[in-house]
Image (cartoon, rainbow, N blue to C red):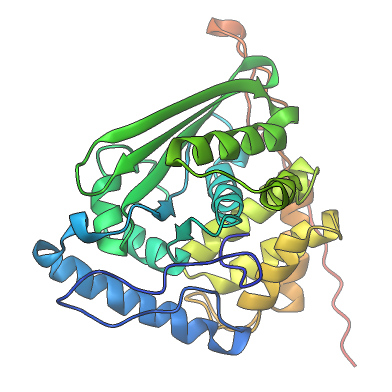
Length: 316
């Protein structure tokens, strides 16, 4: 996934003369991750304060940032799906040596500072500003429209931070069961839009699907969203849940090893009680089938139910 040092060649510089300095972009080991996140937060606050001095035209065309996709649905169980999809796309784009993916810690920091995280307001009008601040010439934004009968539509746009224009518009239709295949199709089309020719080895690497479990991917997406808000405890709980559902989900394992042990705004390290709560929450709040009606006959997409959960805690 994006941020994995083995698969990601991330931007190691930021073209902002007022703040200067270079930042290594690969995700640091767990012991350093909290500090790197704090450094990214500080760097992006300075970038916002000195935004007028940023020359976006000096940013190389191959610097790319992928922001969380907007999710259009009435079922809150899928609300974080855009974070997971953005993570997949960033990871796939990073497979090419000709693309430099800007560090996700910076993107997360800017979205929070601009109060865009989780709001669904990252679009073609706000993306150029985000690109200028994080040091990306081109920014990938998009939307996932979950429709009736389990159908979905993917829309993706490539914007230019210097010109403020949309250089490519990509769209595709499919079903929720084809979500991962649709992401791969979108990734290959993005490479075409970026003018990048892939080698056979790069193409084979991109074709690899990290998981086929929608439940595991939804848990992973919640973890990515929590991590973007610097809630490392919540992120660890959701990554652990994704691994429990699909033990072969390598991206979730890698991210869990990164965030585990780092303090979050909501308390220290992930505890046994938090793990149990995450498991209970996932079992109760599984996503409902995407079957929508119209008018008075439309079924509710979020179930309401009363559940009693008993936790048995044994201590030595």
